[in-house]
Image (cartoon, rainbow, N blue to C red; front, side, top):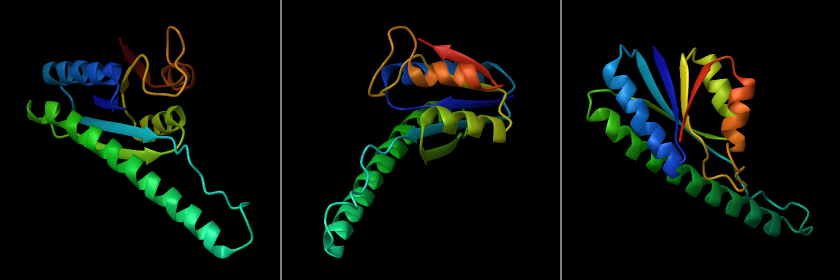
Length: 150
């Protein structure tokens, strides 16, 4: 069995990691992968003037902020991986930029994972009342089994 565990640093995703460790420890697990997908909220403003320096500054600022987002997600995934390592399980780690639901579904299907484990709500900008928009989209659009952890 192959598990794909979604991590964004939220309380729900940390509970999902705990549940995934519990499952992986008690079952015949072939592979565990942790995925963190960040959405870039900042994009370069290339319409802000005609001089190349203004545009270059905005692009460099964009790259720096995206680099920081990537670093933060990598730290979250590294922290989550310690729970698996303490049980003798070495997870793969994937940090991706893009739309979380799309990237999770794509990774799960291309990687032939048997189950996606994720929290009910994450750190998204707008959380729905009962089920987060990312977890809802994953449930609706993937062919892979999904475990939602509250």
